[in-house]
Every structure is written in structure tokens, then in C-alpha cells.
Length: 247
Image (cartoon, rainbow, N blue to C red; front, side, top):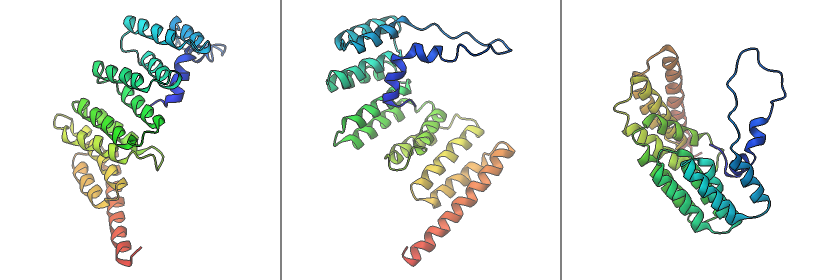
């Protein structure tokens, strides 16, 4: 997902990003033409430079009437309210309204989490978990995507506090995978096993990976699953040995 500070910069300098590299020699094979730069982003950039923040909101609202659900416009509006107008209630209201209208637009959840992080709210951890709980509910019918999102949270740098929501997403994916194919179930369970390992439960990781390996549909999955199961069993054994020696 796009980080919050980079997100605003991306949207406001959209033209520069789209035109980068246009002076390079053309590729030998035809390539799709780059989409035209929406004029609204240049206008928004100018208004931001002039610190005309109410006009930024007005233009973003007008543009959203023409292209509803445009995440970039929603993000610009919300972040302008949050950062430059110091109206955090309005900023969160903008995102919450968008989530209500577009519950499957996952970038909105990630964006809201970043707003909470930047707000330095003492209840930030609880509020962030609530965002992921809402995402788990709204994406329960897309277990494979939910599992991928949970696995992505596990890849964040250590210390960012993403383990609890990652496990929430991974477990919700597992609980709603009945209609998935065997290969999809293998992936969902393998991701959950990784989450259990991150939570210092190598024993549960081995148990879940064993379930996953039964569903391995190809040679790559079988080899990978076997290696993971061996690793989790070894980790569980080492954890017990360390516990016995008090280390």
C-alpha cells in the first residue's frame, strides 16, 4: 500500500509521474498509451501551493461528483483537512463516508490507519485494530485477498504493531475459505501458519501447515509446504528446549 505522505505527493504531482521517461527511445513492440493527465490534479497542485485549502476541498468535492470513488481525490481532501486545515474530525469523516460508500476499496482502510498513526492518539492501537476489524468484516467474502492483506502486514518492519490485525485478517480468511479451491485454501492456511509462527506459536504453525500440505496442488507447493513444516517443527522443539533451560 502507498504510504500517506507519498500518497499526497503522488496525487499532486500526478503529471510529472506519468510523463517521466517519455524521452526514452520507443520500445520495439507497441505499448499501451499512457492515460491523459486529469487537469484537476494540476489545479489542485496550484491551489495547494497557494494555500487555498478551502478551494482544494471544494474542487475535490466537485471532481468526486464526476469521478466518484477516486481514491486519490478522497485522500487529497482528507489529508488537506487533516494536515493543513487542522480539522481532524472532518478528515476522518471524509474517509469514513468513503468506506461506507466503497467498502471494497482497501486503500481507504490503509489510509485511515496512517491518519490514526500520524494523529498520535493515545488510543491509536485500539483504533487501528478497529479499522482492520472493519476490513475483515467487509472483505470476508474475499478470503484470498484478505489472506494476502494479512500476510502483507506480517512483512512490515518489526515494531510497527501489525501482528494482531494480521492474525485477525488471516484467521478471518481461514474461517471463510469454504468456497475456495484447494490451491487457494493451501495458500490461506500457509499464510495463517506464518502468522502463528510470528506470534511465537510454532506448534500451531506446524499444525496449520500440516492441514495446508494436504491441499498442496502442485510440486512447488508440496516442496515448499514440506520445508515450512520442518522449519516450524524444529522451531517448536527449540522453543521447548530453551524453556527448559530458562533462556
